[in-house]
Length: 183
Image 1 (cartoon, one colour):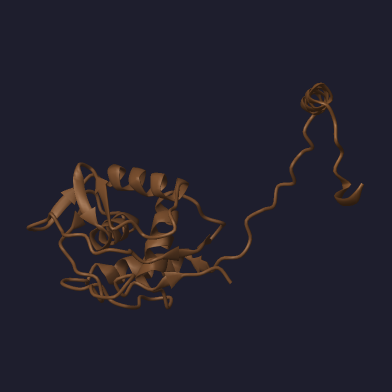
Image 2 (cartoon, rainbow, N blue to C red):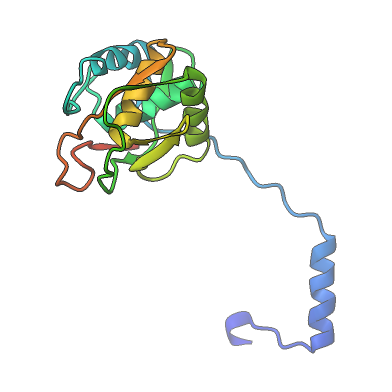
């Protein structure tokens, strides 16, 4: 027949379906995750140190030639202990799509364990864009404040110190954070 379409009765279609269910499904080939920029843990620590100096506005670039999105991803991976030896592998991630209003009026401290738990949960279900705001330790933090919290936790601060900080470019899509791309 043209198109290789078989015409069968309803009963024959039911029997064919039941036979298909009885056959074991072929094993799917697992393709390992490849690609992504490799960032040394020493560069992640240098970026965390550089963020300790961010007062009013996040810098556009950080040590290791990281943009804020790459630093966010790398810091979260380091906190979640998702390393590959002395490096972390970044996947694709876009900067925050929207500017969230800060709820912080002054610097606050958070338990380091809460920040690590949030980073681990975030890495387990990494979205396509940096979330505009996250609840960490009972506080709603903007993306920029979450970046500072991750940096403080990577530096080993306990409690983690966070203060209000603005993104590099609040009027641009991605807020001037840049993107993490997979080559």
